[in-house]
Length: 508
Image (cartoon, rainbow, N blue to C red; front, side, top):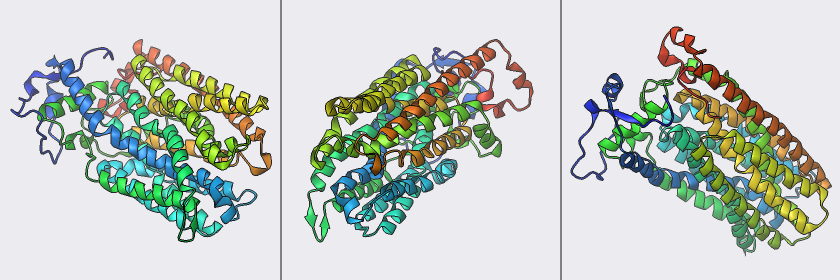
């Protein structure tokens, strides 16, 4: 089925609108769409207006909350970089490589919970599971302000990693329950743009909070107190507003719900027998499919290459800018413009990637831009020129993260395959944290040539892996178009093929 065809809903299953079409339907359990599946051949087009209305409702009721999730997440994981130059390193005696080890501990815990958290997301219900993660790490982040020793810092960072570990994969899977494949990337960018924005917002907030001295706490603890406290409040609020699946979305009318489920089934192109995630059941067959496929392997390794410069940029940008000769306060403020440049680039790239329905070519452009930035940082000795290099890095590398996550999500189906593959991708990618946190060592100041060179090297690897992914997906799509994968239909239950279904096409 072509992506360009209109989505349809069976005439026999059309639902009359309530007189008050905007009144929320009181749906506590998923509706039965078996009749929709049985009479699928007899369909009538969904109007553009109705399809648009459903999408806009999801945009209104889902995306803003996920944006807040990721904003809080990135602020709470990277504010240690702001606290470092506001006195944390001095007060806790973080000499030599102690600061880098404290950063590393976070990723030890983080990577352990990615896949398990994704697999239990549906069981614990996403509308509760994601807010629970958010509230938990907010509490841990707040407690970082009370830390008085290096050991305490290590313990707190470890538990912060446990709390945050399942969030990103969970949000990706959650979005895939609501949006079609080529609506998804732009929605990922709508929440992911909070990452560079957190660098800008966090820098401004840290500038003020770092000046507070009260109750025996000087400056940096208040960064954790205030930012962690805000995360806890936000997490508690989201317990009451996020639906678990489209079937539990009380802001949809019955007609809109039917359309939401119908279009997801059509968009699956044979990879699932239902448009309703609530009807899918767990099977180890799907877990194996999520792990043992080329898209997961290539794009997981590629994300590893992408996330290394993203993490080092987020954690060490204040340090890099301060090394150019600026005071701590000016360095905090100067982190804002590069992050804002990245913010707008993420939105622009996400919009056009969904519009053109491609991922890989945009990644190639972003990687090249970031490579230019690191070359400037290595080659130039002029502070303003090197500061300009940070704009290239931020604007080039940040869009690549939602692109590569959306690319894999697009190419995996159904739910548990997607949950496994996405969790594995994020787990492998976050192993890059062990490289990123040791890329910029105190002994390499002020030029940090080694750190810049490491990031330049992994970006070269990302170029090769992105090109490989484009070639593989194009090759496989041509095989399916020529009927060379039709033999799979005779292998057994067609409903167990998932993304291997001959009608399913990979996004390039």
